[in-house]
Image 1 (tube, one colour):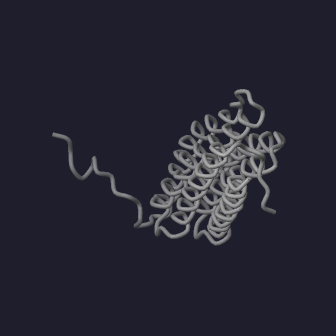
Image 2 (cartoon, helix red, strand yellow; image 1 turned 60 degrees about the vertical axis):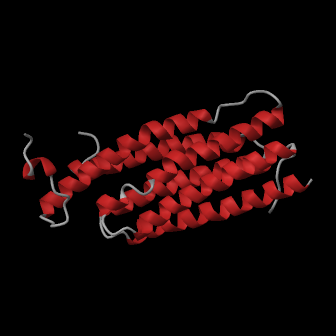
Image 3 (cartoon, each protein chain N blue to C red; image 1 turned 60 degrees about the horizontal axis):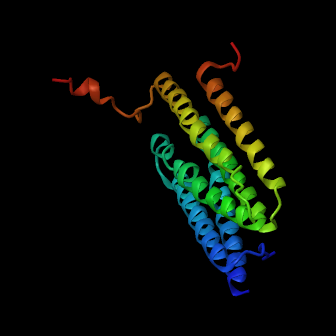
Length: 94
Length: 121
């Protein structure tokens, strides 16, 4: 069972790396000098969160996490597009 | 905290390599987002995570679930397809909005337009 131990530690290390990546994106989201930097940070943040959920899915072997990741991918795209549109025009729906 | 599904040896090693590579590449992209100087440079960095990072982790997840259930399970490809399709759209809109805002504010850091400086022959 040594290969399973390697997989377990690899999953944990990957989760820590993605957590650090989410920290970088959150820093850019909170302290970004301008509004577009914050939106870019938010975009990166949700992609990293989605990858982290996929890793939880691999770790526990359950399908539920996949559905959550898919919903995050869908809603994050819509949110970022709406925010970019807001920066461009000052309103989302014209 | 450290638990893993019961995979046979080759699949466990394969999934471990894919997952580590994907997470590492995503971390490099996010570090770039943190460290690069300008918005127009920063906008390139997270695409490392949204292309190669997503692809590798999704591939690892597909391998894991296919081996666990001993049938072909590739529904994660939906995520890879969707993220790969939507990221260029998002970042193009965002870049255009940033360009508009910087021009309106008269900032000096706008990337110069090569076609104006150097006319086509």
